[in-house]
Image (cartoon, rainbow, N blue to C red; front, top):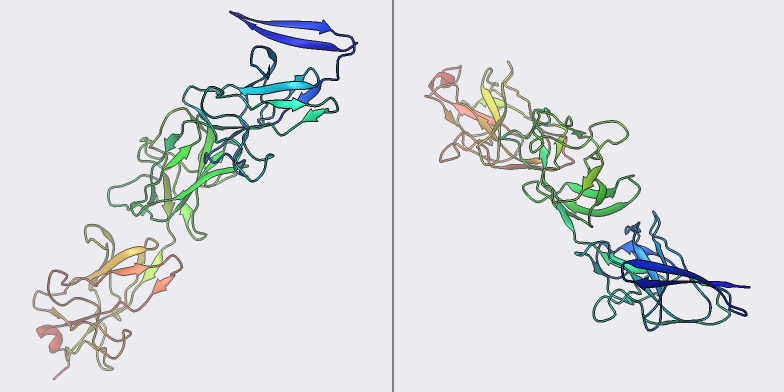
Length: 396
C-alpha cells in the first residue's frame, strides 16, 4: 500500500506524518536546479554555477500545506517528492536577505530559465504545476538567484625592479585581463580588463570561495608573491607552480581592494647612436664619428620617473632596456655646457637623423615613443651633438 509523506508547518516545528492510503497514485520526482545567475538575465549561462544548500520546498496549490523539503546539493541540484497526481507549487528560500530572484520565464527555453516568481505576493513560489497521473518525474523546475555582489580589486602593475612591491614610480598596466574563477579553477565566472592606471574591479556573485587570475603576455613573468610584508602593496598572484597566475583561494565575505598582481614585462631594447654632428645639419654623414661616454636615459612619458641610464660605447652606440610596452622618452645629457643638440628630424630618413629636441621645454628629450606589446627592440633613436670642442675634432 503506498505511503504519502506529509510535512505540515506548525509554530516552532515541522510536523511530518506518514499516512497509508489505499489506491493512492505513484509519487512523482520533482526537481531540478538552483543556480547563481551572475548576470541576472534569468538564463542558465555556461559560466554560472549551481548554489549549494538552498532550501527548496513542495507546497500544495493554495500554499496551505508544506509537503516536502530538501536542500540543493553541491552542484545546485535538488529533488522533491510529490505524493502523486495533483496541483503543486515549488518554493525556494533565498539564502540571504540581500539576495533576489532572477527574472521568471525568460525565453527561449523552459529548460534554461528560472521558474520562480521574483516579485509580488507569490515571490519565491512557482506558478501552479498540474501533474497528471501518468507523470513519473519532472526535471525542469529551476531557480535563478542573484546574490548581492561583493566588489574585488585592485591593481595590476609593472614591477620594474622585480621585487614584488608596488614602488612609487612603477606604473599600472593598462588592458591586462583579470578573471574571477571558482576555487577549483574549473570555471571562469567573470572577466575584465584594467583601466589606464592598471586598476580593475570584479563583482563576485555573493559570498563564497574564489580565485582571481591575472593573464600575462607569454614573454612576461609574474612578480614574487607576498613580498614586503604589506598586503596593500604586494603581489597576490603565484609566480610559479600549479597555481601560476592565480591567487590562493579567497574566502570572500566582504569587499576587498588589496588583490594585486605584479608583472615583470619582457624588456624592449632601445637604442641606437649618439654622434658628433660636425656640420650641425642633423644628418649622420659619413665622416662624423660616434661620441663615447655620453649619458643616455630612459624616462616615462611624463618625465617624472627615470627608469634606466647608461653611457655610450667607444663607437657612440647605446642600449637601454625599456620595462615592457608603454609610453617612454629618451633623454641625452650634453657632454659640455658649450655643446648643443643638432636640428631634429632632418630628412631624408629616420635612420640618419637626430631625434632629440634641441630647444624648448623638452630640450634633451625625444618626443613620446609608444612601444607596442609585440615590440622586441627599436634601433632608430639617435642624437646629434655639436659644439666648440667637437667642432675642432678635425672638421673645418
